[in-house]
Length: 387
Image 1 (cartoon, one colour):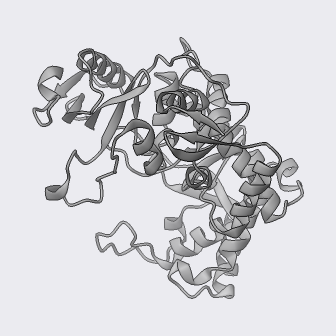
Image 2 (image 1 turned 90 degrees about the vertical axis):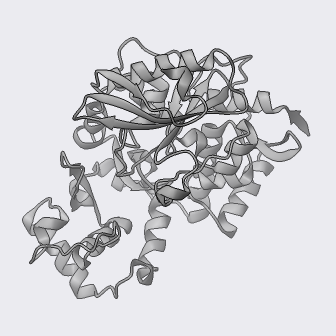
């Protein structure tokens, strides 16, 4: 069995995610497609403290870009669709057949949605969308929604629409400026050429999803490979064994841990790239892998009470070449046109060049967001060097 050092595994992982590709002078749809060919999906999240979750991985790989390009690919050209990939995600439409087993599984798990799915009620929702056209949940409510302060306070209309979305009957027509999902019948949105493709068996589909995951990782543990598309259970275990038996995945050892290598993965001699990585970046999704490769404990603290947060509300990692050398808690202050660095922290591999490189990256990020200045608070053991 081949043995890889942590440094070798880092380089393979970074190259697989596109961090060794040259950054363009100006980002076009072609460059965005290149990123998606590497990552296979972009996670969607409503958090917008600095920038929305799905735009950050593209920025990390390409630099300043216009997120309207993503809307063009997803909602005008229909090259992407929304569904549960890793979590809620933008995915290439070619992956739709590979996720139909998940739609079927969701249909058999009605109870998990927290309401008794009445077929007549769901049929009525579908009928209202069919007759009335694309709609948001608010337009279907008979009375204003009552909020109780919880982000999960979805009323029965929203839950019903999301259930129909989860089983593939509805999909996203577009998003409003406020990022509300506008639902429509799937057959009116996605290309017929995609919907007419045959449906693979769950085993066939999960084998292909694991192939894509392996390509996106370069090298990873079985846990990380399956986590990329949220695969679990005996079918995914069999799919992994099938790929190993077919020599499409090669067992290797990374710093004493068993992992699997994509035989086609690039093995660069070095990686030279500065980037800000959000908690929703696919490079660092699987936190156990992140800890093993980069030696850091990375947790999102949005849902942690303020008094118990160690690093900050929305900390991003700073990648300097092949190592994570710092983390920063960022906030876009639109009113004051400032990117606020609420805290900045060292990591074990911080080096003398890190503060200067991070400051330059923060200036670029602020300019990308249309902010005029960077304001550094004094919290954290690296903050003083960023002033």
